[in-house]
Image (cartoon, rainbow, N blue to C red; front, side, top):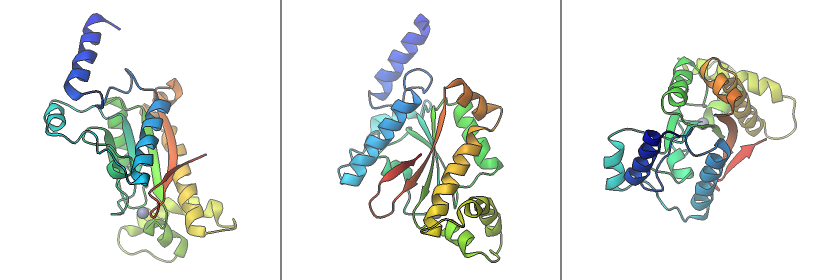
Length: 218
Ligand SMILES: [Zn+2]
């Protein structure tokens, strides 16, 4: 690390506080980042969140720039809020949400921006129990308006588990999150290259509406 780089890091820590976001490529490995998120989730599940990084000082410091440490792709469902279920604050998470946490060009471009320019080192694709977009896919039939494009995006995951035993919606939630994470990790040139170099990791998870727990899917 060059002296000027070191000074920048020290200034960053000083400005944002130790709970603040360090650049993903400077300090925190993808695995350590995942641990940080899951520890936050444990606090949320237990009903003892610490609500970090939500002070006036934090807000003011972030006006100069953002260095989120993780990227979250999750559903728009009003019960599924990443800053809450990971117990994080301002400037910590770069969040992309749409119904069914599906991939399209805008979603991929947003994630690429956070990897390339903000240097976030972890991408978590979080599906959730009883997802309405997944339920619509499993139900079949014609989805009106532009909803059909969401259903079409989830359909391959449903088809991959349609013959499995158990809850078809939950099986599809899991398969879809895994599939999206897998596709995302191979998209060239930005995310694919970052994953190959080890700078970025992509994982899939499932959020439980009742317990609040995020389970990382193998
Ligand atoms: Zn949903």
